Image (cartoon, rainbow, N blue to C red; front, side):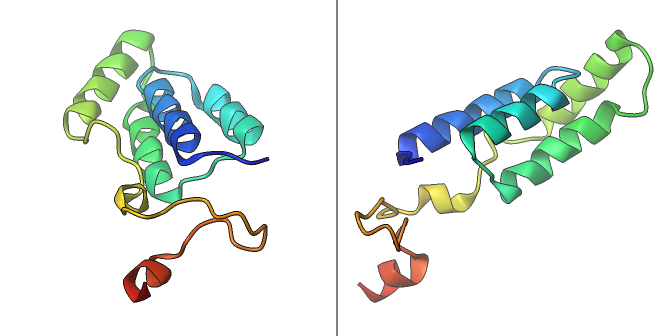
Length: 106
């Protein structure tokens, strides 16, 4: 499955948007599986959001805890690698992305 940088970033943003609501863990996992997208950096933040209300009872208290945790977070915490200029898809199937080392050497 070939994806563009923009498609992957849109999926990651969608995942973060889903995590802003209580009880979307299953939906988030389904999107990750369907799209084949994984960002372990972002996952840290998604887990922190889930942990903020995991042990609470009642939708109101869970939502309040989640909103409080969101105040401390960046707008869309994705891996810094997405902000590196030059990270583009190349045509050889062996290489999916230019590595950061290739960018520094080139």
